[in-house]
Length: 173
Image (cartoon, rainbow, N blue to C red; front, side, top):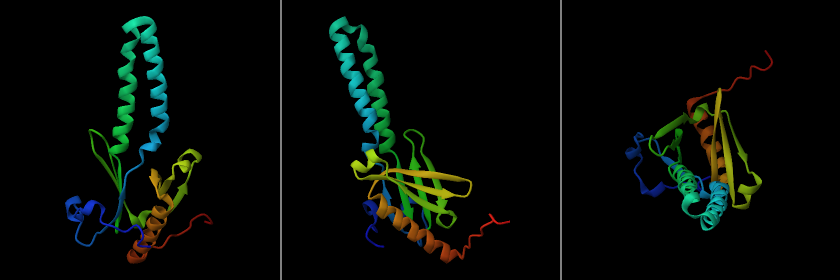
């Protein structure tokens, strides 16, 4: 299971606020290919905008910053998202202007699922759905999604064993 194990960017875990026992297993950002549709749509609208500008002058040029701004926001939002798996927690860091850290202890994760939509599979990307009690979150648009999911599942089971966590099924009560 150590195929993806590395110290991401050679950063010290203590710099993230982790204790000495906590080790960074991997950290990954979503691919910009997840915004491919937004980029194509913006390119179509921008080319249409340029055509209208050549026909009617500068009256249609005011919409160009809107399309460029939307594309830039999508790019920055994807660029500012980071998923970190440590030996004790799973962390999602996101936000352009306001940084939000969502953390979940590994022993609280109930299931891990892999989804590979057709257009993301073309680019070798996938989504990992992480279920926790009463909620879930999506690790979207990452490469090597199957390997990351398997490693996440391995460390979840390892952490549950260390904490001696037992799941109880209440469906038959």
